Length: 546
Ligand code: NA7
Image (cartoon, rainbow, N blue to C red; front, side, top):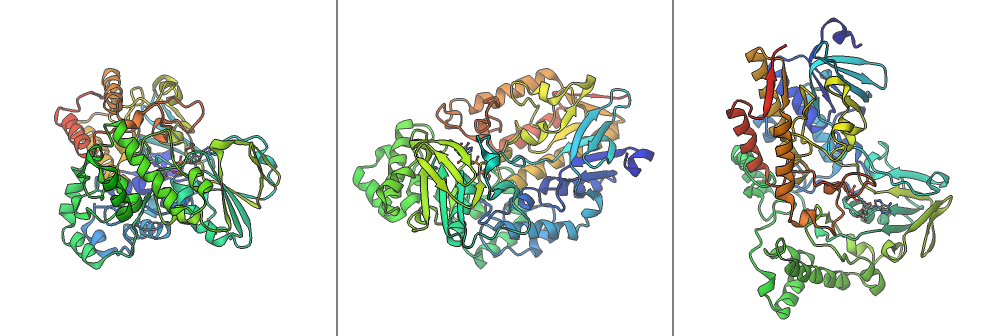
Protein backbone atom coordinates (compact mmCIF):
# COMPACT_ATOMS: atom_id res chain seq x y z
CA UNK A 1 0.00 0.00 0.00
CA UNK A 2 1.49 3.40 -0.90
CA UNK A 3 2.00 5.44 2.23
CA UNK A 4 -0.64 7.90 1.12
CA UNK A 5 -3.15 5.22 0.37
CA UNK A 6 -2.63 3.49 3.71
CA UNK A 7 -3.74 6.44 5.75
CA UNK A 8 -6.37 7.73 3.42
CA UNK A 9 -7.57 6.55 0.01
CA UNK A 10 -6.89 8.88 -2.87
CA UNK A 11 -9.73 10.58 -4.69
CA UNK A 12 -8.43 9.56 -8.09
CA UNK A 13 -5.85 7.22 -9.54
CA UNK A 14 -4.98 7.90 -13.18
CA UNK A 15 -3.20 5.20 -15.15
CA UNK A 16 -0.81 6.62 -17.73
CA UNK A 17 1.15 9.88 -18.02
CA UNK A 18 0.77 10.54 -21.73
CA UNK A 19 -1.10 13.61 -22.88
CA UNK A 20 -4.33 12.36 -21.25
CA UNK A 21 -2.83 11.62 -17.84
CA UNK A 22 -0.88 14.87 -17.83
CA UNK A 23 -3.95 16.96 -18.56
CA UNK A 24 -5.91 14.99 -15.93
CA UNK A 25 -3.44 16.16 -13.28
CA UNK A 26 -3.85 19.79 -14.25
CA UNK A 27 -7.61 19.54 -14.47
CA UNK A 28 -8.32 17.53 -11.31
CA UNK A 29 -6.03 19.74 -9.26
CA UNK A 30 -8.41 22.63 -9.98
CA UNK A 31 -11.01 20.83 -7.84
CA UNK A 32 -8.53 20.10 -5.08
CA UNK A 33 -8.77 16.34 -5.60
CA UNK A 34 -6.04 14.10 -4.19
CA UNK A 35 -4.66 12.12 -7.05
CA UNK A 36 -1.79 10.01 -8.25
CA UNK A 37 -0.79 9.10 -11.78
CA UNK A 38 0.90 5.76 -12.34
CA UNK A 39 3.18 5.47 -15.37
CA UNK A 40 5.17 2.50 -16.71
CA UNK A 41 7.73 4.71 -18.48
CA UNK A 42 10.42 6.79 -16.83
CA UNK A 43 8.97 10.10 -17.95
CA UNK A 44 5.87 11.74 -19.42
CA UNK A 45 4.79 11.61 -23.07
CA UNK A 46 3.05 8.26 -23.59
CA UNK A 47 2.99 7.44 -27.30
CA UNK A 48 5.70 10.04 -27.89
CA UNK A 49 7.83 8.60 -25.12
CA UNK A 50 7.79 5.05 -26.54
CA UNK A 51 7.66 5.64 -30.31
CA UNK A 52 11.15 7.04 -30.84
CA UNK A 53 11.76 5.22 -34.10
CA UNK A 54 13.56 7.20 -36.82
CA UNK A 55 11.15 9.35 -38.80
CA UNK A 56 8.36 9.26 -36.18
CA UNK A 57 6.17 12.29 -36.74
CA UNK A 58 2.65 13.49 -36.06
CA UNK A 59 0.19 13.40 -38.98
CA UNK A 60 -1.78 16.44 -37.78
CA UNK A 61 -0.50 20.01 -37.71
CA UNK A 62 1.20 20.67 -34.39
CA UNK A 63 -0.39 24.07 -33.85
CA UNK A 64 -3.62 22.05 -33.54
CA UNK A 65 -2.19 18.82 -32.08
CA UNK A 66 -1.36 20.56 -28.81
CA UNK A 67 -3.10 21.47 -25.57
CA UNK A 68 -5.72 24.20 -25.63
CA UNK A 69 -6.29 24.49 -21.88
CA UNK A 70 -3.73 27.23 -21.25
CA UNK A 71 -3.58 30.40 -23.33
CA UNK A 72 -0.14 31.21 -21.90
CA UNK A 73 1.19 27.78 -22.89
CA UNK A 74 -0.11 27.93 -26.44
CA UNK A 75 1.22 31.46 -26.91
CA UNK A 76 4.70 30.77 -25.59
CA UNK A 77 5.43 27.39 -27.21
CA UNK A 78 7.09 27.63 -30.64
CA UNK A 79 6.70 24.71 -33.05
CA UNK A 80 9.37 24.57 -35.73
CA UNK A 81 7.62 22.45 -38.36
CA UNK A 82 4.07 22.09 -39.64
CA UNK A 83 3.94 18.53 -38.33
CA UNK A 84 6.45 18.06 -35.56
CA UNK A 85 8.74 15.07 -35.31
CA UNK A 86 8.73 12.88 -32.20
CA UNK A 87 11.66 14.59 -30.40
CA UNK A 88 9.92 17.96 -30.58
CA UNK A 89 6.59 16.57 -29.38
CA UNK A 90 8.32 14.83 -26.50
CA UNK A 91 10.10 18.11 -25.60
CA UNK A 92 6.69 19.78 -25.60
CA UNK A 93 5.32 17.14 -23.22
CA UNK A 94 8.33 17.62 -20.96
CA UNK A 95 7.94 21.38 -21.07
CA UNK A 96 4.27 21.05 -20.05
CA UNK A 97 5.26 18.73 -17.19
CA UNK A 98 7.75 21.29 -15.91
CA UNK A 99 5.65 24.36 -16.50
CA UNK A 100 2.73 22.97 -14.50
CA UNK A 101 4.84 20.96 -12.07
CA UNK A 102 3.07 17.76 -13.05
CA UNK A 103 5.77 15.21 -12.22
CA UNK A 104 5.27 15.49 -8.46
CA UNK A 105 1.94 13.68 -8.87
CA UNK A 106 3.34 10.88 -11.05
CA UNK A 107 4.87 7.59 -9.93
CA UNK A 108 7.14 6.58 -12.82
CA UNK A 109 8.60 3.17 -13.67
CA UNK A 110 5.49 1.56 -12.26
CA UNK A 111 3.26 -0.68 -14.34
CA UNK A 112 -0.29 -1.31 -13.16
CA UNK A 113 -1.12 -5.00 -13.05
CA UNK A 114 -4.46 -5.16 -11.23
CA UNK A 115 -7.40 -2.78 -10.86
CA UNK A 116 -10.03 -4.31 -8.60
CA UNK A 117 -13.25 -2.81 -7.31
CA UNK A 118 -14.07 -3.65 -3.71
CA UNK A 119 -17.78 -4.26 -3.18
CA UNK A 120 -17.17 -3.79 0.56
CA UNK A 121 -15.48 -0.41 0.54
CA UNK A 122 -16.61 0.95 -2.85
CA UNK A 123 -12.96 1.77 -3.59
CA UNK A 124 -10.69 0.77 -6.45
CA UNK A 125 -7.60 -1.18 -5.38
CA UNK A 126 -4.69 -0.86 -7.73
CA UNK A 127 -1.69 -3.17 -7.70
CA UNK A 128 1.56 -2.70 -9.62
CA UNK A 129 4.61 -4.62 -10.77
CA UNK A 130 6.87 -3.03 -8.15
CA UNK A 131 4.69 -3.82 -5.18
CA UNK A 132 3.20 -0.34 -4.70
CA UNK A 133 -0.53 -0.40 -4.06
CA UNK A 134 -3.11 2.34 -4.19
CA UNK A 135 -6.74 2.84 -3.20
CA UNK A 136 -8.98 5.44 -4.78
CA UNK A 137 -12.61 6.43 -5.12
CA UNK A 138 -12.21 6.92 -8.87
CA UNK A 139 -9.95 5.37 -11.45
CA UNK A 140 -9.21 6.96 -14.82
CA UNK A 141 -7.65 4.86 -17.55
CA UNK A 142 -5.47 7.22 -19.58
CA UNK A 143 -3.69 4.26 -21.10
CA UNK A 144 -3.61 5.32 -24.75
CA UNK A 145 -5.01 3.69 -27.86
CA UNK A 146 -1.75 2.61 -29.47
CA UNK A 147 0.31 1.67 -26.46
CA UNK A 148 0.64 -2.11 -26.61
CA UNK A 149 3.02 -3.05 -29.43
CA UNK A 150 1.94 -6.04 -31.50
CA UNK A 151 4.72 -8.46 -32.28
CA UNK A 152 3.30 -11.21 -34.48
CA UNK A 153 4.10 -14.77 -33.54
CA UNK A 154 6.38 -16.10 -36.28
CA UNK A 155 8.04 -19.48 -36.15
CA UNK A 156 11.70 -19.29 -35.19
CA UNK A 157 11.67 -15.62 -34.20
CA UNK A 158 13.51 -16.35 -30.96
CA UNK A 159 16.41 -17.86 -32.95
CA UNK A 160 17.32 -14.63 -34.74
CA UNK A 161 20.92 -13.89 -33.76
CA UNK A 162 21.06 -10.14 -34.47
CA UNK A 163 19.53 -7.07 -32.82
CA UNK A 164 15.71 -6.92 -32.67
CA UNK A 165 13.58 -3.77 -32.25
CA UNK A 166 9.93 -2.79 -32.33
CA UNK A 167 9.03 0.69 -33.57
CA UNK A 168 6.52 1.06 -30.72
CA UNK A 169 9.13 0.40 -28.04
CA UNK A 170 12.25 2.04 -29.40
CA UNK A 171 15.40 2.26 -27.22
CA UNK A 172 15.85 5.65 -25.56
CA UNK A 173 19.47 5.80 -26.71
CA UNK A 174 18.47 5.23 -30.38
CA UNK A 175 19.84 2.65 -32.80
CA UNK A 176 22.90 3.06 -35.00
CA UNK A 177 22.20 1.40 -38.36
CA UNK A 178 25.36 2.56 -40.10
CA UNK A 179 27.15 -0.22 -41.95
CA UNK A 180 24.42 -2.73 -41.03
CA UNK A 181 21.90 -4.59 -43.11
CA UNK A 182 18.38 -4.30 -41.79
CA UNK A 183 15.13 -6.19 -42.33
CA UNK A 184 11.87 -4.45 -41.49
CA UNK A 185 8.47 -6.16 -41.26
CA UNK A 186 5.44 -3.91 -41.70
CA UNK A 187 4.52 -0.97 -43.88
CA UNK A 188 1.86 0.86 -41.87
CA UNK A 189 2.52 4.39 -40.65
CA UNK A 190 5.51 3.39 -38.53
CA UNK A 191 7.13 1.41 -41.36
CA UNK A 192 6.39 4.10 -43.95
CA UNK A 193 7.89 6.82 -41.73
CA UNK A 194 10.99 4.88 -40.71
CA UNK A 195 11.89 3.14 -43.99
CA UNK A 196 13.23 6.25 -45.82
CA UNK A 197 15.32 7.24 -42.78
CA UNK A 198 16.74 3.77 -42.12
CA UNK A 199 17.48 3.37 -45.85
CA UNK A 200 19.67 6.46 -45.74
CA UNK A 201 21.65 5.15 -42.79
CA UNK A 202 21.90 1.41 -43.28
CA UNK A 203 24.14 -0.51 -45.66
CA UNK A 204 21.08 -2.36 -46.94
CA UNK A 205 17.37 -2.45 -46.10
CA UNK A 206 14.95 -5.26 -46.93
CA UNK A 207 11.28 -4.33 -46.55
CA UNK A 208 8.80 -7.14 -45.91
CA UNK A 209 5.44 -5.79 -47.00
CA UNK A 210 2.16 -7.65 -46.59
CA UNK A 211 -0.21 -4.83 -47.59
CA UNK A 212 0.82 -1.66 -49.43
CA UNK A 213 -1.00 1.55 -48.49
CA UNK A 214 -2.52 4.47 -50.34
CA UNK A 215 0.04 6.86 -48.80
CA UNK A 216 -0.25 10.59 -49.19
CA UNK A 217 2.69 13.00 -49.19
CA UNK A 218 3.10 14.74 -45.82
CA UNK A 219 3.92 18.14 -47.34
CA UNK A 220 5.75 18.92 -44.15
CA UNK A 221 7.85 22.08 -44.03
CA UNK A 222 9.25 24.59 -41.54
CA UNK A 223 6.34 26.33 -39.83
CA UNK A 224 5.37 29.32 -41.96
CA UNK A 225 5.54 32.54 -39.89
CA UNK A 226 2.26 33.88 -41.21
CA UNK A 227 0.45 30.63 -40.31
CA UNK A 228 1.88 30.69 -36.80
CA UNK A 229 0.82 34.31 -36.36
CA UNK A 230 -2.66 33.59 -37.71
CA UNK A 231 -3.17 30.68 -35.33
CA UNK A 232 -1.73 32.46 -32.29
CA UNK A 233 -3.84 35.53 -32.91
CA UNK A 234 -6.95 33.41 -33.18
CA UNK A 235 -6.16 30.56 -30.78
CA UNK A 236 -9.39 30.64 -28.82
CA UNK A 237 -11.40 30.58 -32.06
CA UNK A 238 -9.17 27.76 -33.38
CA UNK A 239 -9.81 25.68 -30.26
CA UNK A 240 -13.54 26.34 -30.37
CA UNK A 241 -13.67 25.36 -34.06
CA UNK A 242 -11.76 22.14 -33.31
CA UNK A 243 -14.28 21.17 -30.66
CA UNK A 244 -17.16 21.37 -33.11
CA UNK A 245 -15.42 19.89 -36.14
CA UNK A 246 -15.39 16.39 -37.58
CA UNK A 247 -11.91 15.27 -36.58
CA UNK A 248 -10.75 18.01 -34.25
CA UNK A 249 -8.85 20.19 -36.72
CA UNK A 250 -10.06 23.73 -37.45
CA UNK A 251 -10.50 25.46 -40.79
CA UNK A 252 -7.65 27.80 -39.79
CA UNK A 253 -5.21 25.09 -40.92
CA UNK A 254 -7.05 24.29 -44.15
CA UNK A 255 -4.73 23.65 -47.05
CA UNK A 256 -1.64 23.32 -44.92
CA UNK A 257 -1.15 19.54 -44.93
CA UNK A 258 -1.78 16.78 -42.46
CA UNK A 259 -4.96 14.93 -41.66
CA UNK A 260 -7.98 17.15 -41.35
CA UNK A 261 -6.32 20.10 -43.09
CA UNK A 262 -6.70 19.08 -46.69
CA UNK A 263 -8.87 21.35 -48.84
CA UNK A 264 -12.45 20.13 -49.25
CA UNK A 265 -12.61 17.82 -52.30
CA UNK A 266 -14.78 19.44 -54.92
CA UNK A 267 -14.89 17.22 -57.97
CA UNK A 268 -16.62 13.96 -58.81
CA UNK A 269 -14.18 11.53 -60.35
CA UNK A 270 -17.04 9.76 -62.12
CA UNK A 271 -17.60 12.90 -64.19
CA UNK A 272 -13.97 13.22 -65.31
CA UNK A 273 -12.43 11.98 -68.54
CA UNK A 274 -9.30 9.87 -68.82
CA UNK A 275 -7.55 12.87 -70.33
CA UNK A 276 -8.46 15.07 -67.38
CA UNK A 277 -7.30 12.47 -64.91
CA UNK A 278 -3.95 12.20 -66.69
CA UNK A 279 -3.54 15.96 -66.52
CA UNK A 280 -4.36 15.99 -62.81
CA UNK A 281 -1.85 13.20 -62.19
CA UNK A 282 0.79 15.19 -64.06
CA UNK A 283 0.11 18.21 -61.88
CA UNK A 284 -0.62 16.70 -58.49
CA UNK A 285 0.92 13.24 -58.39
CA UNK A 286 -0.18 11.20 -55.37
CA UNK A 287 -2.24 14.12 -54.09
CA UNK A 288 -4.60 13.76 -57.02
CA UNK A 289 -6.47 11.07 -55.10
CA UNK A 290 -7.82 13.52 -52.56
CA UNK A 291 -9.41 16.02 -54.91
CA UNK A 292 -12.50 13.84 -55.51
CA UNK A 293 -15.59 13.85 -53.33
CA UNK A 294 -17.35 10.69 -54.52
CA UNK A 295 -14.83 8.11 -53.30
CA UNK A 296 -16.47 7.41 -49.96
CA UNK A 297 -19.81 6.28 -51.32
CA UNK A 298 -19.12 4.87 -54.75
CA UNK A 299 -16.89 1.78 -55.04
CA UNK A 300 -16.56 2.48 -58.76
CA UNK A 301 -15.32 6.02 -58.11
CA UNK A 302 -13.00 4.73 -55.42
CA UNK A 303 -11.47 2.17 -57.76
CA UNK A 304 -10.91 4.82 -60.43
CA UNK A 305 -8.97 6.91 -57.91
CA UNK A 306 -7.01 3.82 -56.85
CA UNK A 307 -6.08 3.28 -60.51
CA UNK A 308 -4.69 6.81 -60.59
CA UNK A 309 -2.73 6.10 -57.43
CA UNK A 310 -1.26 2.92 -58.89
CA UNK A 311 -0.29 4.75 -62.05
CA UNK A 312 1.53 7.32 -59.97
CA UNK A 313 3.45 4.54 -58.18
CA UNK A 314 4.55 3.30 -61.61
CA UNK A 315 5.63 6.83 -62.53
CA UNK A 316 7.73 7.28 -59.39
CA UNK A 317 9.27 3.83 -58.90
CA UNK A 318 11.71 3.01 -61.69
CA UNK A 319 11.79 -0.77 -61.48
CA UNK A 320 8.46 -2.09 -62.86
CA UNK A 321 8.42 -5.19 -60.64
CA UNK A 322 9.08 -3.15 -57.51
CA UNK A 323 6.43 -0.63 -58.59
CA UNK A 324 3.90 -3.42 -59.07
CA UNK A 325 4.82 -4.73 -55.62
CA UNK A 326 4.10 -1.34 -54.04
CA UNK A 327 0.65 -0.96 -55.60
CA UNK A 328 -2.25 -1.39 -53.19
CA UNK A 329 -5.03 -3.55 -54.57
CA UNK A 330 -8.21 -5.24 -53.46
CA UNK A 331 -9.34 -2.78 -50.81
CA UNK A 332 -10.69 0.77 -51.05
CA UNK A 333 -8.79 4.00 -50.43
CA UNK A 334 -9.99 5.53 -47.16
CA UNK A 335 -10.88 2.41 -45.19
CA UNK A 336 -7.72 2.68 -43.10
CA UNK A 337 -6.21 5.66 -41.37
CA UNK A 338 -4.37 7.47 -44.17
CA UNK A 339 -0.61 7.07 -44.00
CA UNK A 340 1.34 10.18 -44.82
CA UNK A 341 4.91 9.88 -45.98
CA UNK A 342 8.06 11.76 -46.80
CA UNK A 343 9.78 10.29 -49.86
CA UNK A 344 8.55 6.74 -49.25
CA UNK A 345 8.07 5.50 -52.81
CA UNK A 346 11.25 7.25 -54.00
CA UNK A 347 13.17 5.26 -51.38
CA UNK A 348 12.60 2.11 -53.45
CA UNK A 349 14.70 3.61 -56.25
CA UNK A 350 17.77 3.36 -54.02
CA UNK A 351 20.26 0.60 -54.77
CA UNK A 352 20.40 -0.45 -51.13
CA UNK A 353 16.64 -1.12 -50.70
CA UNK A 354 14.85 -4.35 -51.58
CA UNK A 355 11.09 -4.81 -51.46
CA UNK A 356 9.72 -8.25 -50.61
CA UNK A 357 6.06 -8.21 -51.62
CA UNK A 358 4.66 -10.88 -49.32
CA UNK A 359 1.52 -11.14 -51.47
CA UNK A 360 3.73 -13.21 -53.77
CA UNK A 361 4.69 -15.61 -50.98
CA UNK A 362 4.56 -14.93 -47.26
CA UNK A 363 6.96 -15.23 -44.35
CA UNK A 364 7.48 -18.87 -43.41
CA UNK A 365 9.87 -18.49 -40.51
CA UNK A 366 12.54 -16.36 -38.97
CA UNK A 367 15.99 -17.93 -38.98
CA UNK A 368 19.17 -17.00 -37.04
CA UNK A 369 20.28 -14.87 -40.02
CA UNK A 370 17.09 -13.49 -41.55
CA UNK A 371 13.64 -14.31 -42.86
CA UNK A 372 12.61 -17.35 -44.86
CA UNK A 373 9.76 -16.66 -47.28
CA UNK A 374 8.06 -18.63 -50.01
CA UNK A 375 10.19 -16.48 -52.33
CA UNK A 376 13.51 -17.35 -50.75
CA UNK A 377 15.71 -16.47 -47.77
CA UNK A 378 16.68 -12.86 -46.98
CA UNK A 379 19.62 -12.15 -44.68
CA UNK A 380 20.26 -9.15 -42.45
CA UNK A 381 21.89 -8.12 -39.14
CA UNK A 382 19.08 -6.15 -37.54
CA UNK A 383 15.35 -7.00 -37.47
CA UNK A 384 12.78 -4.23 -36.99
CA UNK A 385 9.15 -5.03 -36.29
CA UNK A 386 6.94 -2.17 -37.53
CA UNK A 387 3.93 -4.38 -36.93
CA UNK A 388 1.63 -2.00 -35.09
CA UNK A 389 -0.37 -2.27 -31.91
CA UNK A 390 -3.11 -4.13 -30.14
CA UNK A 391 -5.11 -0.94 -30.57
CA UNK A 392 -7.71 0.65 -28.32
CA UNK A 393 -8.46 -2.33 -26.07
CA UNK A 394 -4.99 -3.86 -25.68
CA UNK A 395 -3.76 -1.68 -22.83
CA UNK A 396 -6.95 -2.17 -20.82
CA UNK A 397 -7.18 -5.91 -21.30
CA UNK A 398 -3.62 -6.63 -20.33
CA UNK A 399 -4.32 -5.32 -16.84
CA UNK A 400 -6.52 -7.45 -14.63
CA UNK A 401 -9.48 -5.08 -14.33
CA UNK A 402 -12.35 -6.39 -12.18
CA UNK A 403 -15.56 -4.59 -11.38
CA UNK A 404 -18.52 -5.36 -9.16
CA UNK A 405 -18.70 -9.00 -8.02
CA UNK A 406 -15.16 -9.60 -9.28
CA UNK A 407 -16.32 -9.66 -12.93
CA UNK A 408 -13.42 -9.06 -15.27
CA UNK A 409 -13.30 -6.58 -18.12
CA UNK A 410 -12.11 -9.45 -20.32
CA UNK A 411 -15.45 -11.19 -19.65
CA UNK A 412 -17.43 -8.00 -20.20
CA UNK A 413 -15.64 -7.49 -23.54
CA UNK A 414 -15.56 -11.12 -24.60
CA UNK A 415 -17.39 -10.31 -27.85
CA UNK A 416 -15.81 -6.90 -28.37
CA UNK A 417 -15.57 -3.68 -26.37
CA UNK A 418 -18.81 -2.48 -24.76
CA UNK A 419 -18.92 1.02 -23.31
CA UNK A 420 -21.38 3.83 -22.80
CA UNK A 421 -20.07 6.87 -24.71
CA UNK A 422 -16.58 5.38 -24.66
CA UNK A 423 -16.38 6.71 -21.10
CA UNK A 424 -17.58 3.94 -18.79
CA UNK A 425 -18.57 0.27 -18.65
CA UNK A 426 -21.56 -1.16 -16.80
CA UNK A 427 -20.49 -3.10 -13.73
CA UNK A 428 -17.36 -0.95 -13.32
CA UNK A 429 -18.49 1.94 -11.12
CA UNK A 430 -16.32 5.07 -11.03
CA UNK A 431 -13.93 3.66 -13.63
CA UNK A 432 -13.49 5.94 -16.64
CA UNK A 433 -11.68 5.49 -19.94
CA UNK A 434 -10.15 8.45 -21.79
CA UNK A 435 -10.65 8.17 -25.57
CA UNK A 436 -11.97 4.66 -25.07
CA UNK A 437 -13.64 2.48 -27.71
CA UNK A 438 -17.03 3.92 -28.61
CA UNK A 439 -15.71 7.51 -28.69
CA UNK A 440 -14.15 9.41 -31.65
CA UNK A 441 -10.71 8.69 -30.22
CA UNK A 442 -8.29 7.56 -32.95
CA UNK A 443 -10.49 9.04 -35.67
CA UNK A 444 -9.77 12.47 -34.24
CA UNK A 445 -7.06 14.86 -33.18
CA UNK A 446 -6.31 13.06 -29.91
CA UNK A 447 -5.48 16.22 -27.97
CA UNK A 448 -8.97 17.60 -28.62
CA UNK A 449 -10.67 14.34 -27.64
CA UNK A 450 -8.47 13.96 -24.57
CA UNK A 451 -9.36 17.42 -23.27
CA UNK A 452 -13.05 16.82 -23.88
CA UNK A 453 -13.03 13.50 -22.02
CA UNK A 454 -10.96 14.71 -19.09
CA UNK A 455 -13.18 17.79 -18.73
CA UNK A 456 -16.29 15.60 -18.83
CA UNK A 457 -14.91 13.17 -16.24
CA UNK A 458 -13.74 15.98 -13.97
CA UNK A 459 -17.17 17.66 -14.14
CA UNK A 460 -18.79 14.32 -13.41
CA UNK A 461 -16.69 13.75 -10.27
CA UNK A 462 -17.47 17.28 -9.09
CA UNK A 463 -21.16 16.67 -9.74
CA UNK A 464 -21.12 13.49 -7.63
CA UNK A 465 -19.24 15.21 -4.83
CA UNK A 466 -21.62 18.15 -4.83
CA UNK A 467 -24.62 15.83 -4.69
CA UNK A 468 -23.06 13.72 -1.97
CA UNK A 469 -23.25 10.72 -4.31
CA UNK A 470 -20.47 8.21 -4.37
CA UNK A 471 -20.98 6.02 -7.42
CA UNK A 472 -21.68 6.32 -11.13
CA UNK A 473 -21.90 3.63 -13.75
CA UNK A 474 -23.82 3.16 -16.98
CA UNK A 475 -27.17 1.49 -17.13
CA UNK A 476 -26.64 -1.79 -19.09
CA UNK A 477 -29.45 -0.86 -21.51
CA UNK A 478 -27.86 2.51 -22.27
CA UNK A 479 -24.56 0.77 -22.83
CA UNK A 480 -26.14 -1.77 -25.23
CA UNK A 481 -27.91 1.00 -27.11
CA UNK A 482 -24.67 2.99 -27.46
CA UNK A 483 -22.74 -0.03 -28.74
CA UNK A 484 -25.50 -0.59 -31.33
CA UNK A 485 -25.43 3.07 -32.34
CA UNK A 486 -21.63 3.10 -32.76
CA UNK A 487 -21.90 0.01 -34.94
CA UNK A 488 -24.84 1.24 -36.99
CA UNK A 489 -23.33 4.50 -38.07
CA UNK A 490 -20.05 2.85 -39.13
CA UNK A 491 -21.85 -0.01 -40.87
CA UNK A 492 -22.08 0.34 -44.61
CA UNK A 493 -19.21 2.83 -44.80
CA UNK A 494 -15.86 1.89 -46.27
CA UNK A 495 -14.45 1.72 -42.77
CA UNK A 496 -16.18 -1.59 -42.17
CA UNK A 497 -15.64 -2.94 -45.68
CA UNK A 498 -15.14 -6.71 -45.74
CA UNK A 499 -11.93 -6.24 -47.73
CA UNK A 500 -10.42 -3.93 -45.12
CA UNK A 501 -8.23 -5.33 -42.37
CA UNK A 502 -7.65 -2.24 -40.29
CA UNK A 503 -6.69 -1.97 -36.65
CA UNK A 504 -9.86 0.13 -36.20
CA UNK A 505 -11.61 -3.25 -36.60
CA UNK A 506 -9.13 -5.18 -34.48
CA UNK A 507 -8.40 -7.14 -37.67
CA UNK A 508 -4.62 -6.94 -37.18
CA UNK A 509 -4.66 -9.12 -34.07
CA UNK A 510 -5.41 -12.83 -34.51
CA UNK A 511 -8.48 -13.86 -32.49
CA UNK A 512 -9.58 -10.30 -31.67
CA UNK A 513 -13.32 -9.78 -32.26
CA UNK A 514 -13.83 -7.92 -35.55
CA UNK A 515 -15.73 -4.85 -34.36
CA UNK A 516 -15.36 -1.27 -35.53
CA UNK A 517 -14.23 0.42 -32.30
CA UNK A 518 -14.18 4.22 -32.68
CA UNK A 519 -17.23 6.49 -33.10
CA UNK A 520 -17.40 7.94 -36.61
CA UNK A 521 -19.94 10.74 -36.25
CA UNK A 522 -17.23 13.28 -35.44
CA UNK A 523 -15.99 15.12 -32.39
CA UNK A 524 -18.55 17.94 -32.68
CA UNK A 525 -21.58 15.65 -32.80
CA UNK A 526 -20.12 13.46 -30.08
CA UNK A 527 -19.47 16.42 -27.78
CA UNK A 528 -23.08 17.51 -28.17
CA UNK A 529 -24.27 14.02 -27.23
CA UNK A 530 -22.04 13.94 -24.13
CA UNK A 531 -23.17 17.42 -23.08
CA UNK A 532 -26.80 16.47 -23.71
CA UNK A 533 -26.44 13.42 -21.48
CA UNK A 534 -25.23 15.69 -18.66
CA UNK A 535 -27.97 18.26 -19.29
CA UNK A 536 -30.51 15.44 -18.94
CA UNK A 537 -29.20 14.60 -15.48
CA UNK A 538 -26.61 12.06 -16.66
CA UNK A 539 -29.10 10.19 -18.83
CA UNK A 540 -28.17 6.51 -19.11
CA UNK A 541 -26.02 6.53 -15.99
CA UNK A 542 -26.98 5.23 -12.56
CA UNK A 543 -25.81 7.50 -9.76
CA UNK A 544 -26.03 6.26 -6.21
CA UNK A 545 -24.94 6.95 -2.67
CA UNK A 546 -23.40 4.42 -0.34
P1 NA7 B 1 -0.17 -0.63 -38.47
O1 NA7 B 1 -0.81 0.45 -39.23
O2 NA7 B 1 -1.04 -1.63 -37.79
O3 NA7 B 1 0.82 -1.38 -39.47
C1 NA7 B 1 1.40 -2.61 -39.13
C2 NA7 B 1 2.08 -3.17 -40.34
O4 NA7 B 1 2.66 -4.43 -39.98
C3 NA7 B 1 1.12 -3.45 -41.49
O5 NA7 B 1 1.79 -3.20 -42.69
C4 NA7 B 1 0.86 -4.95 -41.33
O6 NA7 B 1 0.43 -5.59 -42.50
C5 NA7 B 1 2.22 -5.42 -40.91
N1 NA7 B 1 2.19 -6.73 -40.26
C6 NA7 B 1 1.61 -7.05 -39.07
N2 NA7 B 1 1.80 -8.35 -38.80
C7 NA7 B 1 2.51 -8.86 -39.83
C8 NA7 B 1 3.01 -10.15 -40.15
N3 NA7 B 1 2.80 -11.20 -39.33
N4 NA7 B 1 3.69 -10.32 -41.29
C9 NA7 B 1 3.89 -9.27 -42.12
N5 NA7 B 1 3.44 -8.02 -41.89
C10 NA7 B 1 2.76 -7.82 -40.75
O7 NA7 B 1 0.79 -0.06 -37.33
P2 NA7 B 1 1.72 1.22 -37.36
O8 NA7 B 1 2.55 1.18 -36.13
O9 NA7 B 1 2.44 1.33 -38.64
O10 NA7 B 1 0.72 2.43 -37.30
C11 NA7 B 1 -0.28 2.49 -36.29
C12 NA7 B 1 -0.83 3.87 -36.17
O11 NA7 B 1 0.14 4.67 -35.49
C13 NA7 B 1 -1.07 4.62 -37.43
O12 NA7 B 1 -2.30 4.37 -38.03
C14 NA7 B 1 -0.98 6.07 -36.98
O13 NA7 B 1 -2.19 6.45 -36.43
C15 NA7 B 1 0.04 6.02 -35.90
P3 NA7 B 1 -1.16 -5.69 -42.84
O14 NA7 B 1 -1.56 -4.30 -43.25
O15 NA7 B 1 -1.84 -6.12 -41.56
O16 NA7 B 1 -1.25 -6.69 -43.90
